[in-house]
Image (cartoon, rainbow, N blue to C red; front, side, top):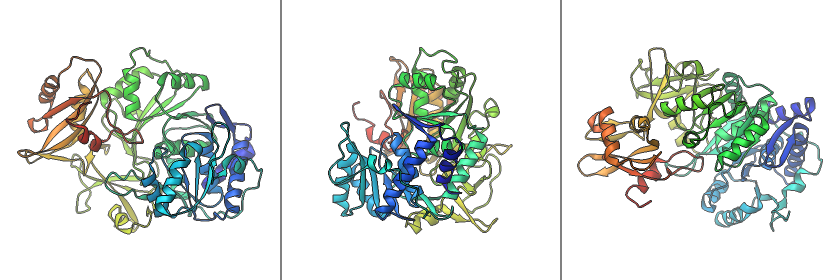
Amino acid sequence: MRVEDQLFAHARTQPDKLAVIAGDKRLSYGAFAAAVASLAAALAQAGVGRGDRVLVFMENRAEAAIAIYGVLAAGAVFSPINPSTKADKLAYVLDNCEAAAVLTEARLHPVVVEAMTVSGRTPAVWSIGDRDGVCPAGAAAFETAIGSAAARPTTPGPSTDLAMLVYTSGSTGRPKGVMMTHDNIAAAAWSITTYLENRPDDIILSVLPLAFDYGLYQLLMTVRLGATLVLEKSFAFPQAIFDKVRTEAVTGLPLVPTMAALILKMQSLEPDFLPSVRYLTNTAAALPVEHIQALRRLFPRARLYSMYGLTECKRCTYLPPAELDRRPGSVGIAIPGTEAFVLDDAGQRLPAGAVGQLHIRGPHVMQGYWRNSEATAERLRPDPETGGVMLATGDLFRTDADGFLYFVGRKDDILKTRGEKVAPKEVEAVLHAHPDVSEAVVFGVPDPVLGEAIAALVVLRRDGVSARELIGHCARHLEDFMVPKYIEFRPSLPKTDTGKVSRLLAAELMGKKS
């Protein structure tokens, strides 16, 4: 089954059920499907067909959900682009995927125009109008495209077709387009909703960008279930989000560590302050053990899932909530229907406790990087056990005696100081254990003697704590070569567009005045 088929099936069986709540818009499955069919027809009429790439360049809003499913219903491939993307990067993506169309909004239309000028490409453009409903010059009106009451095109192909192209952040160079088929998406969505024990009556709130696969899959999984998604633009005003959770009786709350840290800094929150929430999830980076414990106190009715994943396969592992007390530092076991194992550089499985690269096998693994065979070959390795391929994650892990997985660090995150290897995550865990530390990021800075000196940026819960005190705290819990040489304080940590703390940006900020 293709991804969009699930939407049309729910529209037939439960047309009046709420599918998406975004701001003041409340979109039923029937209305959602009708808008998607109309958009698909408009795309087809403009010559967008099977396999063509279409950029969805919008903030979190109901129209973005319509755009994603409309592209799929036209038989095309959607590529979600973060609304903070600048023209140069957008121009690169336009060129790289040879986009046939761009779906955007008035506020972002100037960026599209600039990117088209840079790239020289002239894809068809549909834009949502401004506050007065005026569509930007040179773009077709998105509102007209979704309001024409046209029938869904009949051109889509099989579920083995490419469905989405998600560009990675490009932290190590030009962004790479991760290719996922309808079958890849379906496998990942089935697996995740299975271990989360999702139900059709779930109401899931997401403040995560739809351009971030964690946020995107909240939509994809919601529609798969026939549940309801409450889509918000950001977590900038937590109390407003909490009010929304209460008003809509939200049952599922996806978090990233920076959101968890912000919640835990709010001293006024009482345990069970959001009683409707029955599960929380975390990915993007591991939660410190202290944050896990504090969240469980605030959400005594909710199950908390620590998870690990990457864009190239969506999700890799999850920790069953029943294991939190025994293995709070673990990211768990392979998600249902998949396998995860730790290999050495020769491709041999490693025993418990040994550190090696995590590899993933399953139907959710990407098809490769768009038109980048060299990068694909680095990640998709021949699997001698099955004759197929396995995904080399680029991340270092170890297992315990029971096979539960523990993240050690990125292969390229590992620091070398005094000839010794240091995993930043291990130092961060010690910093987070200090009662006055809210957030911390650890990285290396060049040092003529040490090779790399260990450094950290820290966000405090209260003023009055010195760098010397924190260095002493680390010295009490870490081997001497792992103790940070430099610690600086900041009101917040530098983050990527998806809300993940950036070691690269932190290193660039080190030594600069805040």
